[in-house]
Image (cartoon, rainbow, N blue to C red; front, side):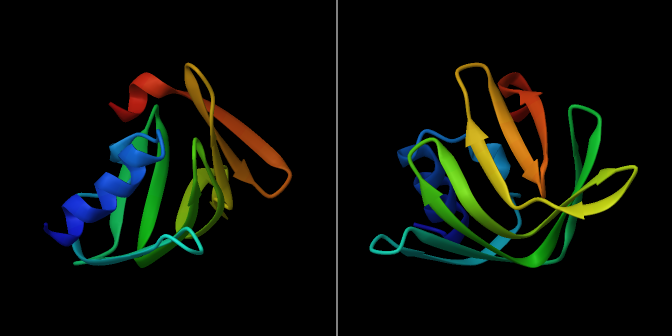
Length: 112
């Protein structure tokens, strides 16, 4: 299994969309005891989800739980200025991104 496949399998196993992780993963590790997924990307990634610019650092670390990511490092979104995305929560038809005290709901279809 490639590092990319491993990272996506963790997301799938936890009912999260696989597009949350970029496709240029060159190394990944999963610790099922702590729920920590670490992915190293070939290079930082800039993308857009539902019109919102998002950038991934070369190293992304997340605590993954069923249906949500309560702790996230290495991902930022541009909402007037670049801010750190600290958590992601799944809902039936959307994902809720936490940026400090601000939450932004995006349709799940944007991640398929």
